[in-house]
Length: 143
Image (cartoon, rainbow, N blue to C red):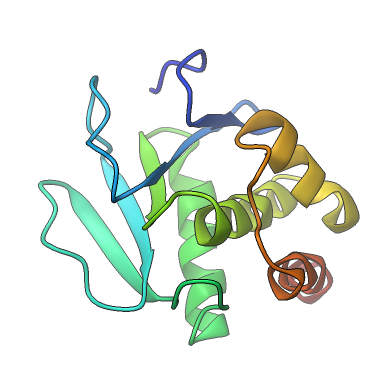
């Protein structure tokens, strides 16, 4: 599992750990993820671990909301027993939005999920009003 004391690791209320990061930054030292979801407008380079790509342009929302929900549920499910990573270019907007949605799946109320991620992951996470609204609606749609 991840070391919960390392920056970029979000501890969910259930104890599951998910690493968020920006792909434009160097790969962090330490263990590699077993599974990752990359949130980018174009296909990412091949990873040395299992990964999925979700088309999600910068400052926007996922192009396929159903696929987004499926992949974020997979992140939540696998985080119970594997090292899981969620990443976009900078590691804040799209990654923060995805982490907030995973927090909702873990039981954080949708209205509190953005604040939870900002407190426990990155204070600048979830960058746009439509990303915040997406998290609130994600909670309503998955509840």
